Amino acid sequence: MVLEHLSTAAGAIDLNGTGHYIAWGVIQISWANAVVVALMLIAFGLALVLPFPGHGDDAPGSDK
Amino acid sequence: MSATATAAPKKVRRPDPAAGKWRGPTRPYDLVKEFVAALAIIAVLTTLLAVLFSSPDEKQITMQSWAKANPSDFVATAVTELAGTSESAGYGPPYNSASDGQKLGPLTLQKWGGVRIPVDPANDFVVNPLTATSTTDPAVAAALKAWTGASADQQTKWAGDYADAIGKAPDGDPTKVATGDYGPVPALATGLLALATTGGLDAQLVGTTSGFYATDYSKPILFLGDSGQLDSLATDQHLQGGQWGMMNETGNYPGQAWLWLFSFWYQIPPFTTDGSAWADNADVIITALMALLSLVLILLPFIPGLRSIPVKIPIYRLIWRSYYRRYASRQGASE
Amino acid sequence: MSAPTQVEPSSWTARLRARTLESMPSDQALPDRQPAYVASWIYVFGVATLAALLVVVATGCWLALAGPAWWHVSSLGHFVNSLHLWSVELFFFAMIVHLWGKFWMAAWRGNRALTWISGVVSFLVSIGAAFTGYVSQTNFDSQWITFEAKDGINSTGVGAFWNVVDLGQMMLWHVTLLPIAVGVIAVLHVVLVRVRGVVPPIGVDTDGNVDATVVGR
Image (cartoon, rainbow over the protein chains, first blue to last red):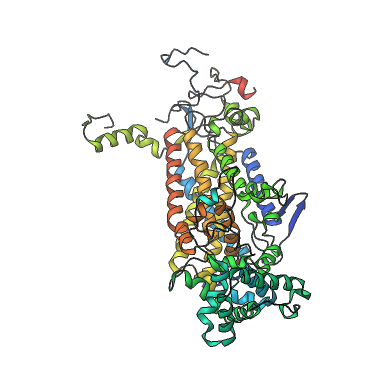
């Protein structure tokens, strides 16, 4: 069964074990959390700048 | 204020240009297709992440595993329970009345909750479990008899002196304490250690609250929490409050990044100033502060200044740039 | 015929029907057109949040089938737990990017304050739902989290009634009460978006006219 092969206790990349942290003054953040937050900021930035497809049929007031 | 001919002016205030049905240009947009695509993408991403990284499952600790891994710490903690000097003993509501608990200014919120989850550490963690299982050990039975027959002051003196002696012993090893009058306390502590090592204490601590079925783990968690064992395991995993632990997960897994602001306050003075009223009442003050900030976020549309930030810092010009460009010639709107 | 019919004033059913149809005519519930300004990738994060919520609930139901100890003893169970955890991470990821987008759009304009409010409330309730999930793991993580969290909650007096160390209470909140709350608020939120429409751009009125001074052109 494919599912049995998928279900190992540690994933293909084992995130168990000693955690790694970024320390900067009073701020201490795990690398994992820092990566997640960075990805969110990148996603937000890309969403703002990437062009959205299609110019459709811009019929004024035609949504009745 | 523009005087449009279309609507009879019926309000004194400027009408909100964003209110009402959109009568401007539209474009085809397939909401259902968008939802199905989103569902498929999220399902695939979830599966990919689960296959790549799995999820953490650090094994639970038990009174038994604690007693075996760190018997000196176990005995030392049991003695502080008998002496009434442990954190649980002095906690206050909802467990006992040893203190009033935390205050938000003059408001004794913790006390108002009342003692609804009664926990008496000396008896619940040590005496009662031993009593229930002492029939097979005459030494423990005799120690219990000596303990329960003594006055409260005598009990406190025995246990307090023994706790101090353990603190002074090399490596905190109870077998190496200086001789002194500790009454039945050493026998009680070693008896409890023996019970814990068999696994019997885990059952006693949970079962005594409600018998056969039990879901309330207050007693074992409080007892474990008084130890150095739980503390050092948490420190290793960066889960302590002063390590931004509220945000963290074990290992290298992402945790709860959304708790960043709640976690932040615990890192700065005056909440880190030991002995200050701010530090002593940090939990209730910070919880109240976060409730207030949440209220500000909820009521943002009504807060002048804050609600104008998106207009003053015009990120919106990026979002809607194609509309502005295409329909710039449709003049006539006013803010 | 969609012309308003004569409503029997004493009929609650007829009055409710009339009010419902009035606020959301049938072609507005699932329109196949949107205002022309709905043309940015920032708009996908709302539907992504909804999709992630569905995966969270589905994987949660799968875990519920076999009970809370399953994932510790079965590798399939552990995999389903991983699906549940990562769908939650994606849920919060999408929801917060959606919140950032809605803030910078000042999406509460035009009588849409309740849409904003229901969104923020659903965020806060979701945090509560996630918390009760973390304390239901029945492993070291839940032992530590309950040990710490009890202090915060006890300090407010609420801990006397809401016992984070009571596995039964927390798990029932996690599996029934809080998902229902999140679901109801999410439905309210989406209905509000459909009823009020997606907020027009800043500087644009509902006829589509553009105020050049606001858009800097």
